[in-house]
Amino acid sequence: MKFFTCDNAFQFTWDQVVAGFWQRYPNPNSKHVLSEDVIERRVEGTQLITKRLITKTNSLPKWGERFVHGLNKGVYLVEESILDLKNKTFVTYTRNIVQQKVMSVEEKCTYTQQGDNSETTQCTRQVWVNSGVRTISSVIASFGIQRYKKNASKAVIGFDYVLNKLYGPESEAENKVIPESRKEKAKEFAKAKADSVKSKLPRPRLTSCQNDGS
Image (cartoon, rainbow, N blue to C red; front, side, top):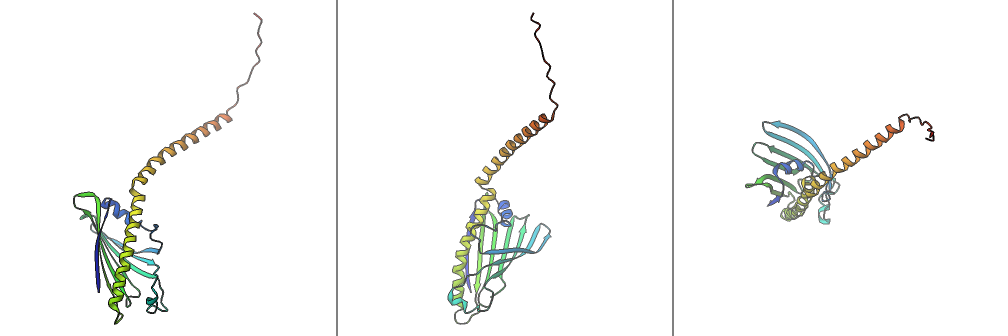
């Protein structure tokens, strides 16, 4: 078994990160994610517990194809999460549910507010990779760790992209522009309505006037 851990910081509040988590797909770095479905969701006290099924594509190296011959090369993951509003913690557990004999990957991510800085959220990632293939299990596990590092880096970039779209400076600028454009549209609509009403009003009769010459 191989183990890897790392920390990532997102320059957003914990509330924003948690809210954005459910909207992280799609993004430019997640084209391999095909679908995500909620299997179960319940509330226990101040905790929201969710179980989801996530489907991803899975490209294999040539040497790996011999171990999954005849099997679906897609990856099905179960993601279980615990959102604790009272303690402001958000923990996700993800594991693959197919091809486990060849390689099993279990990931735990913990999202917490970083120290006293309420504007930064830290994500601690932990992953365990194991293989049941004799003689080369260590090689496969090492390959799994390296692939995880690469994918995790893309996941961080993709999630940060989504957070910036939702809460970053560009999003704030868009929110400021939208009301102004709405005001202009409202003015145009009101003017058009007024012109339409005026056109339907009866025109005043014109009377001829003659000078009396005085």
